[in-house]
Image: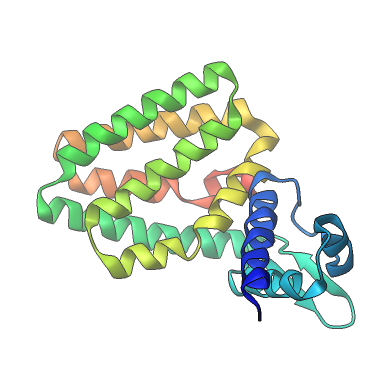
Length: 214
């Protein structure tokens, strides 16, 4: 593969990934190598390579005899992903308390949650989703465990896409619920209450309590 094809592959990969995350390519949408190649005025080779990368990342799926599609989030996949996140993030909270950095994390998350409130008032839902994502990523980063961080990163893009696409069903309702739960979780961190912090986070990540996801 030439250098130009490698660069084009990366450009197409990023563009398609951004479209999936932002909802411009919705869950379940069928995509075409030919149409994408024509849009970018390039050959099919870098497009095919970019699609392969997105398949490996779990954002696209190839169905024999049918074609390539943006992944369709069914109930089981949502439950599996949220439970995976719960295990990782609650484990990170446990480590944060062991390391004695829960107060630092709590103060930082307070700031993020205040920004999220501003974004709700402004109805800036793209920024709101970005900060919601950052809230949870910060929990994992504070644990300072490379293995947990990589595991959490493995569902990061899908998590952002889910927030953007499914969360828009009831933006005001679910966003207020989220910041209220974030505030309660943060207060437990600041009050050195490990048990309730973990229980609150488990509840917050329980998909059965998030009707907008299902």
